[in-house]
Length: 458
Image (cartoon, rainbow, N blue to C red; front, side, top):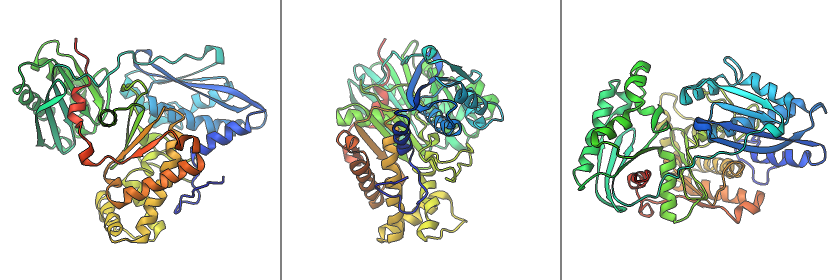
């Protein structure tokens, strides 16, 4: 595979964006269409159409390897408990075997079953039986009228704003320790106290919007790192409906909307840019994503980019949690920096935490160390190709990058190299997509104000 911009420290990198392009080229004459669809709550469905070699022409393994990556990517982009493979029984049956208890994608099966509270299934069907796209009908976000509470639940502090007609009239940040507390009442009281404080600065409360890390379905908490220490039993009993329960204490029938913080960050960016089709990518402890669609709305998709594959190379580093190779978490997070350090000739003390290891590399970067520059250069090349891959699923005009990996000079190098990939390898995308690192002063619309705009008034 010839890359026009090499990943300096990773010569075996095989960008999935190029794999998609090559598959389309190779199957022009001798191909068959395949539709992958993923269905989640309320029958919301996202479809993706591609092409593979005709079944039985000696390319069955190649076809499966390709469709397996694309199905995995669509699953973690959109979220769901049901995958449809339409157009190839051969590939479909192999995907079905992979997504079983104890199968190749065992982690994905159990994760999605927990999120959607439904057994996972793969349906193999003909092209004419493939489901159609069905999107979440209710747009969320950008509603600024009335008296609103915006709450942003971070791992180290919680922020709340009282917002009247789009203007924040009161904001506060309070340090808290949700990740080390096993008593869900600690979380409940903290959230309730924040909302009551905001409510006290307004004549009434018309709506509540919440931004928080994790996975939310119908405003219920399905998976969230804030409740790391809470037992499964307490999680089911006291955590799942926590935001809905708190809202009832603020007032009966107040509309509430809970969204992933990545989506709310993308929404804040879109409101700041006064545009739409925004993909936000945060490179921190992991890789987090958020998306605002061409209509300017949040979609209800998972956007769990940490688990979306970006590298087709079978020898790529495996993520310890999911057990899968080539996924975003090992490319666009502190893990990505740590992974590349030895190839750059930087030895990191094993006794250091991942965050401390990142700081060492950032310190070298500040001192103008060429080895540290090579790390950010490589991540930038990864990212340029990843953006092109993300366009298989997202309509993108703007990419916002943030998170501690992108701070300082390293972020600038990363962005320059990503831009070079788009310019040289994907000129059609380069014309359309703008890359941004939002600086603090440009974030005029804060996270909690964007959160406040989530619900529509009754």
